[in-house]
Length: 389
Image 1: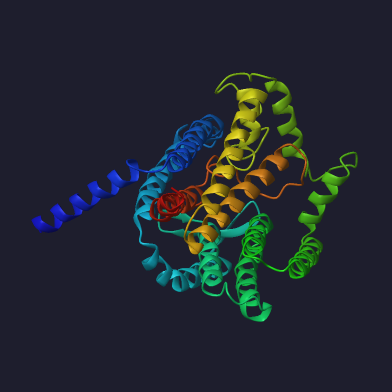
Image 2: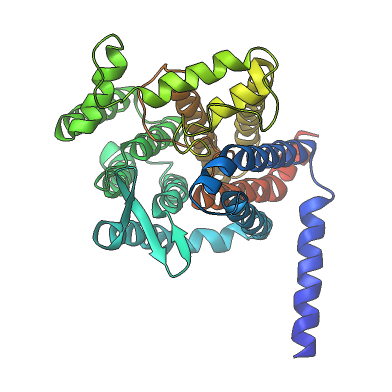
């Protein structure tokens, strides 16, 4: 027993040491930006959630403490993921992807709804959103399959199967009425396939088919169509108050001005923007931090995307490159959609701001994904730099 404890202690020290020391400049830049975004997220979750928590009879720190626990778990998962052998990981991907789909299917039978989306599971005291797990699992599956079949450019052999499997994964999420997450996953799929060399003709065919499917889904759910019409026609009567959140989000930005009203001093978070710590947290950031701080935050997301692009291009391992590209699309698309919705440039889709919005499953899985990216940079990025030198 003592020897086992000593080995575990030694392995932990070695893992943490390799995680923190002796890595490339790009490794530390990615780690620094991710850490900064998580820190900003924790601060803003505390600021935006305290009033509603107290109003609901809870401690003002309830949501913040939950997010803090998720952040700690996410950091642990990031360190572990950064140390994984990719040869071992690739052998596990089939069952990881299958398990994620099964877990998502369980929400259709045993899940519960939040905001009309039935995509959450309760496992005792733990609340889980399997669609966040499925995002990463789909990226891993695409990266592995395309790496194995990159030499064959026949559509039926190389492109059909990953496309079909991705649509199955996306379908399990959309059936739970979470169209926003489904659209983000569709963008990830198209992005990875495009980077892998998907023929342009098939890219447009898949995009056209996806568009038709989205239009059909909008016709099925009256609330979705109502949100679209309310966004397209803001001068129309809005008895269901579909534009309530976006209108108040714009008021929040207007009251924030250039420098903001100050941390914790938002007026709109007092029940004027429901669930302000989630999808509309960027509105509270704009009110309390002002336009300048909001632009700095956007700049961090742009810089992170830029670093991921170059990390993928300069990586010597094809699987790692596809993995990083998938995460890059995930971060870029989801952040863009969230900010565009808050600024009333898009209709409400229910997509959180990555690494910022409250949501344990999202934070843990994103940090796990970044751990894999850091592991790819550590294992294969250095080899590429050595060959260049």
